[in-house]
Image 1 (tube, rainbow, N blue to C red):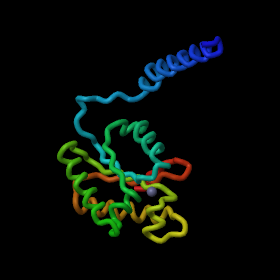
Image 2 (image 1 turned 90 degrees about the vertical axis):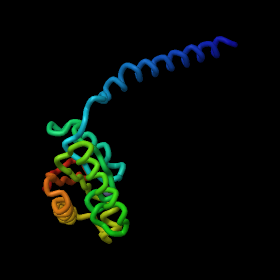
Image 3 (image 1 turned 30 degrees about the vertical axis):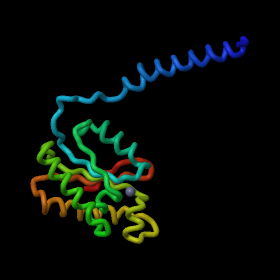
Length: 171
Ligand SMILES: [Zn+2]
């Protein structure tokens, strides 16, 4: 083994130690801890499966003064439209089962829906050239009526996530 190889081996070891130390002492320690004794949640959040908006939604839910970690998350393509559309009827059944479980197991009080702009589910299902905020508001209102009919005691809020990751409450 020549001196270059020994030098490379030492650098590799040092880099490995540095990465391991950083992961152990920084990244994981900044993650919120899981509270094993925590029971229940106030809100069931319904979001879309679109990966572009997952970070904005989780950031908002984590940092919202009202919510922090006091929620459970359910996602369907199209969020509100995912429940209302009829092409995949099992989606609304799955949503209903999870609302039932969320009431029974976690004592949720409200459902919060987060639609987002530029949603492929909206464009394909409704045949839209361009996604339209007014149509989201209409569907969120329909979802509110749908939930109120089945679960009159549950509160409801509707939001839209913009393409700039801003979140606006619309209902
Ligand atoms: Zn979407």
